[in-house]
Amino acid sequence: MLFSLLDVIVRPIIFSHGSIVISVSTNFSLAKDFGVFLLSIWSGFFGSFLGFFALQFIYRYLVACKSKTLKTFNDSRIILWMILPVFVGLFWGSVTYNFLQPNHTINHDIKSIVKEEFNWDTEELAYIGPNLYESSGNGEIHVNEKSLIAIVIIWSFVNISIFTVSFFAIKCYLRINSKFGGSTSLNHLQHQLFYALVTQTLIPFILMHLPVTILLCSTVFNLELGCSSSLVAVSIAFFPALDPLPVMLIIKNYRNAVANAVTIRAFTLSRKQQHSN
Image (cartoon, rainbow, N blue to C red; front, top):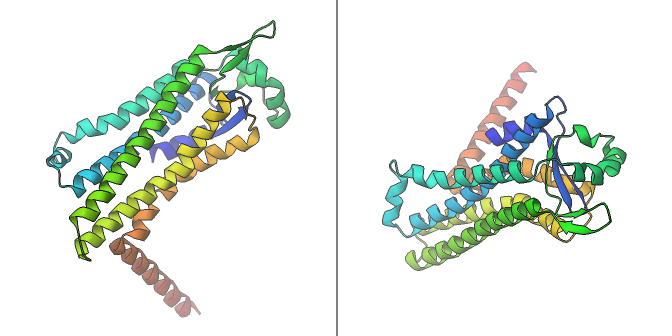
């Protein structure tokens, strides 16, 4: 909810030009420095999401194998677990704010194309993003160390999240199949929960992991994505709305409850319509 609120305030779009990928705030009522700060927080939320995805699968595995470690989620020690994704988010946002600030080189390199595409003045824009390959005055190309460090850190977090999710997903699946045999209700529920969680992870993988990976690759390999890169901001904005749906639709009890609520609501509206006629 906080991420969605911040998204409404900042109204970010993502723009790619060669090795430059920037997130731009289109809320021009914000002061430039404040806009950069909010964009860094917005980016940090993305990093914390990656941590929460991994934590979800760790928790699901602990439930499936009835580990004693599960007790740590039922008392004050849960704070230690929750600190992990919060730390990732804070670290991600700090890296973004300290290493991917606006600079004159980016302003110069994107000035003409941004003016042509959006009619914006780069000097007034609040944005964050890397420019991996910078050109000097004599035409030589050199690697921007700050951008390189930021890309390595961000890519590392993305890969760690994907690896953790995949590792515990496989272990969870194997555990469920080995522990619960036959067609018992417990086995059925475990599989529903597992498939719901898998689907909940496919959604952010498609809407968040994959787009960011493509953007990072375009930066490293100096690929031109242009305005099509703005679809990434749209896909990220869709995530909070779509993420709860798998649980509502896959878990039988929830699915029945939603169906009943919709049916009752439709019946009530129909009766009201009949009375009004």
